[in-house]
Figure 1 (cartoon, rainbow, N blue to C red):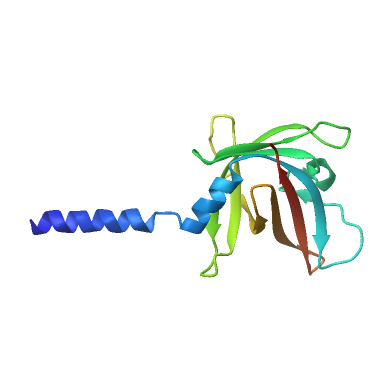
Figure 2: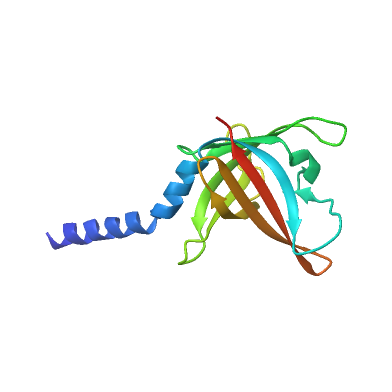
Length: 161
């Protein structure tokens, strides 16, 4: 009887240690669906910026891009429209929401996968701070260093209906 109890307790500890917080579950539910990246802007510095986002394409290519997040299997993709400056097409991702600290500051993290959900990034991924998330809009931020100065990239999304 004691052995069964110890096994049960061990399984219970494993199950609770792997669980996602209530805050992260709520954010995952809100993220589920289709979004449009309306605008990319920069904070904490002055001047004009031209940047490559997610080691993929220039920032201008991402404006107007479509993003899809599937909650039930943590996959999704974003689509960049083809143009003279942009290599268009779908980029597949595996994503999750993580709570960074006890104040429930959450981050959206993702890495690139292929169409068959296999990692193609060698474990490299990206984390964006979730600043605001409602059923209609989302604001994400990431800090980057340019010439020794911190520049915050701001991503403004709207939910598609």
